[in-house]
Length: 467
Image (spheres, rainbow, N blue to C red):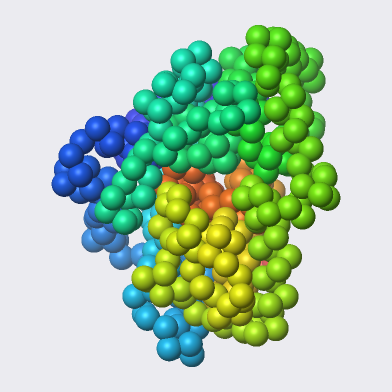
């Protein structure tokens, strides 16, 4: 279980770069709102240029594109999206913009794949990410104590794509306990903390230190306080999946103590804030109340979109979809004006107040814009990552590598499921960690294959028999 006994080595510069960029993408929109717009906009997009420049540097050192495990899956996505745009006489700029939104952070995967991943570097990455988690937890505590004023101070600016970013009022009419941290909304914060809980548990299984279990418990509590309903579901999936995968190595007593502490803190919070318990019960009740789900409240619009649009898309544009939404009709990430919802060819009768939420039901959107073949190409990307993670899980010799692969498998489940409820798949502040984990798993998969070939060659030499 422990990786402490391995030899020391120099920390990876690639992992340090990935961590620096993850920190920047998560925190920058809060800090940059205090800068003049002509300064803030270049600073906001500069890290993406740094990311691609580093990939370019790696390519110069050794040209490896076609052997990149996501090369053909990404080509399949680009091809289906391009064909959809051509068939529907859509703007190719719209196709390029969509491809960038979905896959711009796949550069993290390439960097991770070109990194020599060892147990020490796995721990380096997870501990670095959990440092960001502690920052977000600290901001969350300040939001609980300071209320709406503190929340407004830490709220990020939204609507950067329109060139007119603004700070949205993050106050809520329920109990004031909703947490956002420095992220775009409570769903992003809930997803971020779900990932934090998963990786803190992974580090606990690697090192066995109780402090990692306490951090996992604090992250789970933060998910509850985010009031994000789908993040509660994702937290349950994450805990159930990772505990099932690690069932042979679970120190049950410590797990019980850790999550008992989270429960005690939650009970203490409800006692301190009497409005929290009723507000939380009402929030969870909307997940099972048919009347609530069938209402036209904005928070239930995602289910309406899924049920209403899926059959229409399958009937009208089954193979390649309707093509990308015209750039003039797109809704930028962080926009709040529901009247900006785009028109849809398969559902011209839906008002913009409904189609505004199309980006939240990501997989329905992909089905509508790029059809079943486009959706299959996207699935090819996830399948490729899952296949590599499963290979590492079965064949990797180091415990840290196995645990990383297991965490990656759970992460795939989380982001696939979240695509039916929110836009974490395209969010700057939650998706980079997913692509980085995928790259590290691909690197481990190459090492596992090399080890298998060495064992095979040794067997041939020893026996003179070709298997």
